[in-house]
Length: 311
Image (cartoon, rainbow, N blue to C red; front, top):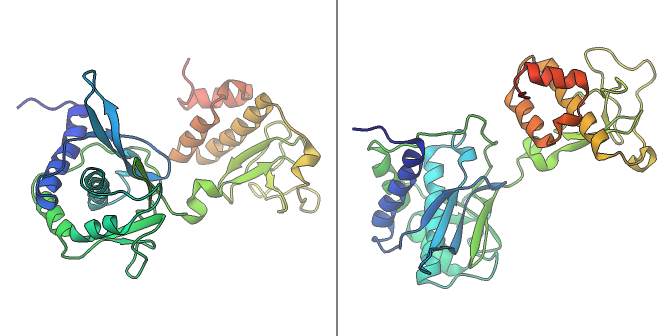
C-alpha cells in the first residue's frame, strides 16, 4: 500500500474522526463540512457556518482545529474539540443558535445528550448557558464510549507540532450563530497575555517577555527592568549603585521602530547566549520580532551561527 502524503494523512485522520462521531453521536445526520487546520491564537478550534463557497454557488461549513496543541494535550481532548464544534454545526442546520457569543439552552441540551457537559468553569456545578462556556466529558457518557471505540482501533493523530503552544486550562468557547471560537482561560505566568514590558533605564529601549527574565541592553550593557520594580542581578554582576527603579516610560521618550528592534533582538541574543542553543522559547521570540535586520552586527552573527538567519 502506498504511503500517504502528510496532507492526506493529517486531514484524512480528522475526516475519519468526523465520520465516526457523526455516525455514533448524530445518527449520521450532519452534512459534510470542510475541516481545516488554523493557528488561531487562544483557541483549540472553531466553527463557521457556510464559510466556503464553490464555483457553482454551493456552500459548506468550516470546522477549524488548531494543530499547535496536538503535542501537548491528550488525544481525547482533540476529539472533544472536534465534537464540540460538530454540535455547533448541528445547531446551525437543525436548531436555533443563540445571539452572538451566547450559548443557549438548546445548545446545552444537545451537548448533554451526546455526553459533553457544558460548564462555565469546566468542572461540575458550573453554569450550563452563557457568553463564555467550557465543557467536560461525562464519564461513561456517549462521547466517552464513542471515543473509546475509535481509539481501540488504529486511529491516531500522526503529525504534531515540534514547537507546540502551551496547553490551555479549559476548553472555553466564545461563539455565535455564524462563527464560534474557543479561546483559552488565563494560564497564569505562562500566558502570553501576561508578558511584561522591560525597559533600559539608560537609553529607554523596550522589549516584552514573560515575568522573571534577566535581559541586558545591547547598547548600554545595562540590565533591563520592569517599571516600578528593582533592576535584576544578571550573572551575579549587580549594578554598582543601589538597585534602581525605572521611571515612567514617558520620562525616557519614544524610540524609533529600528531602535526598538535592535533592543528587542539584543534581549533575544542574551537569552540565546545564556541557553547556549536555540530553544523553543528563543526561536519563538526571534520570529515574533519580525525585524532582525536591525539587530546589532554581533547579534546578527550569533543568530546566523545558530541557523536563525540564513544568507
